Image (cartoon, rainbow, N blue to C red):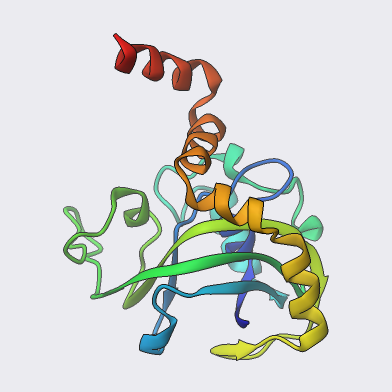
Length: 195
């Protein structure tokens, strides 16, 4: 299984934590992934280094417009796992282009709205079917890299076929909706659909 190392808090904002589900469906890079990675599931590795500047800017709402403190997956920066695989995701699409930093922003064509808040370009990996796992300690590397056999086995044991199926299904979409908007709003939508 391939892996991608991502600094905290970004890695946990993708996969979530005990206090919040993942809210960041895009990973920004300066390089395009290999074409063979599109449609592939890969491990998300929380790198050893923390992006302390981004922690501070997020806390003061200076980095991501509309950032909500309820999105923090952990209470304190020191609680964010590092040097470990913390989840898996599927790379579904790649966007290329510089976002305009003055309003209105010029986003790449067909970019989903939930990606726009997080897109910084010049390349964005759209991530879906994200599953958070208990951290599996592991050293990281640059670019996409291959997990050691023992780490891959530990990751795959946590990402069971049932959890994987749920994450990719409409059930998973419903669970994400409940996490994001609450059970009452989700049930109200179902009642409206049923008439």
